[in-house]
Length: 576
Ligand code: ATP
Ligand code: MG
Ligand code: MG
Ligand code: MG
Image (cartoon, rainbow, N blue to C red; front, side):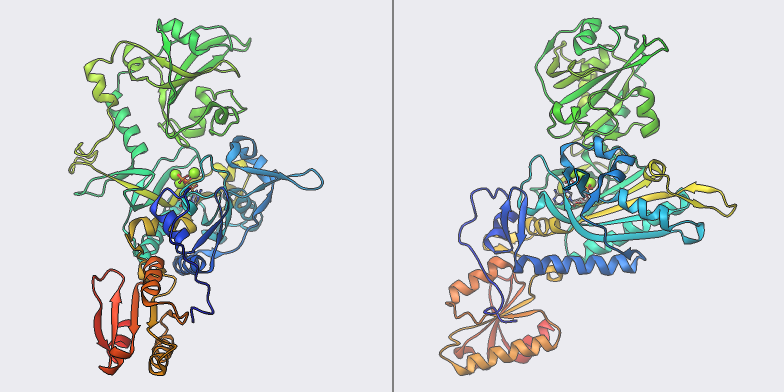
């Protein structure tokens, strides 16, 4: 490939809205171009990287026995109504209407459509297990699109869905995908870690995130360097807190005004003053008798992860909180999540706080308090109790480096990461909602046990750059670089020898299957080198008259401090 035929467009300065290094460098290297908030054109240089990422994913997914198909970006709302997600999902789900006024969504993920295919196509146990995947455009109307294509609104995801006859075989499918992900991220040449993750919102049973290690990552991960323990911080802290609280709970029964148990009622019953806050939710959920009288009110404590405003809660963004702002009852939540503590999306459900005696109250700070009815909540309430008792301070302390590992095999370390992949054992949530069954050996219909597996294709680019760059630009890992080698002739317009040698080296490398670019743009050496260091091509070969006289060219790896003089044959040998 010749640079003059290709499209190279670099910038000296990054645009002002680029906060993180990967966003800056991708813009400067001409990989992406902003079209709107969280919406980018993938320019030719960036698209080459995306295609390489996709190729590796495809190869490994196919190797793992998954089958590729392609589901539409625009999906009818009916399927999403079957699972309730059309109403529940909140503003991240982009809803559109067609000319007939029918509802559609732009897919943020494809469980519904996939399950619809499965319930029609997979009828017998003999067809299971099956794993389908696609690499497709997604749209999520992110509250804060940022960091370029790392948190875009439109992005590309590889999502796969497995269907099994029972939990035991579904677990094997899950492990198979887990292993495929290890290979995929290994092949990208990135430092990454698989961590246990919460399973709440999607109703699943087993879940891991694949995190690319980078100081600028939005996520925190906790691991033990001397054992296999690794979890994301939400899971680690939730479990630590539960363990610390342990048996310190008891039942509390409140009898506030039916349907109007506001945080003020709760506060009054507990004899607590209220002040300002924003970080968590306390939910009061009433159990009513047949006449609609409250028999029991359970106080639920949810700690918010990230910033959520109550409008999102009201819009039903948080699963489990059905019908807008009516909070799920204890029974509903238990039914939905099983009896074990789980998480509601980005919100941590810390178990029904059956006890709101002093100990629990001491755990509450910075929260939003709500009730069973719209408009009976407060954003910004704080249980301004006396300072927690000393032993409770330990309970609510964050998990920090040096804490004992829960497996007892060492101490914990904390790193920051970028979530690039996520595997879930879903169980039968979707197959039950959508009645996806197969016939077992006895001809009896059974719900399929599902798993889902995502990789943020376009996010990988940002994550790779966050991990691999220097002051001069991007340093692509070989496997996903837009070009492996750039040949830079000096004075090509003046010297036929240089021109011929550069062309020859380009042709020879190309014949060897090397992804090589010949920079024939006629740029000055300084500008040419700066461009390719910015773009991050792993290998550079400089051809000059002076070098050729000695039968040599200058080779420099992107991470090398200096160039090395090599013969042409040696360079071919090195790069093939
Ligand atoms: P995040 O926690 O970053 O919002 P998520 O948990 O919502 O991600 P999943 O639903 O697990 O994302 O989707 C699978 C993968 O898709 C993620 O692991 C991530 O790599 C990618 N992804 C999710 N949201 C975005 C986005 N807004 N832009 C780019 N990639 C994304
Ligand atoms: Mg998200
Ligand atoms: Mg996540
Ligand atoms: Mg995720």
